[in-house]
Length: 380
Image (cartoon, rainbow, N blue to C red; front, side):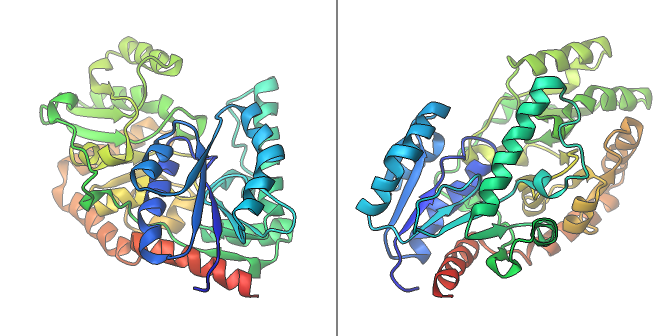
């Protein structure tokens, strides 16, 4: 690449799978890009701590909405011109803009490109209006970008078809597995933390969001119990003090399946391998996703993936997943039992996942593709 000074915007990334994507980028960028990088991140975040540990150049921004607003309008322009920035790259989330400076955005907001799906169906009144307004802002800023990087071909196609965004200003870069498996920063969590007593553990790496369909879990367990199976456990990366978590546990107690739900709280990217390795399967019951780290992590760690039977999931996973009707708890229970009781079926799903994952870029290759697209765009 020719010498280009890039401002990497990580401000929108605070939790969830975005942290892993950011960690991969921060780790791999110095290996494939020799020129100056300056990062923006939120103060006190895991991303900020990682940048500090790697000796990267970064600026911290206040986490509050007001703080971010003030930064965008009073500090951003000064930073861009003080550091002679050539291009801004927002790894994920709404882009940021300075007049005269190209801005490229990575987009994973799947619901923006599937307007026929009522993504916020569970919200009512002002709460739903609030989320619709946030979506409007995200879409507006995404389409304002000079170029967009997608990880899902359907979204890339719909961006042009629905919003007349120039197709040649977009690219598709598939996700990669995170760098943590062979990283010295990997942290193991003792199996005792999980109370492992050889149950069949279905892991959901997720936070609370209506899209994730977590509320069905007690009813899945009840369906399993009705079939005579009490040895399946759902392990969720949820805070047990969260109001929704308390409601989930109450429902589970009423159904007499509370012992089969384990809330372990949020986990850091470096802890993910240990959490997955202490599980038997990974569940993803979302209505809609751009992609999900859960998918490629299941393939990489050779765990069967149980996923919603939807257009987006079929397009991504092909025959490397167990598809379930996301609102049909009896069907989900049936497929879990099939995995649990039929080793040959489980192996077939796992083997196909390994095959498909081999076609995805390595962490280093993915970051290389990102920089190559930035350079190619600037050269046009």
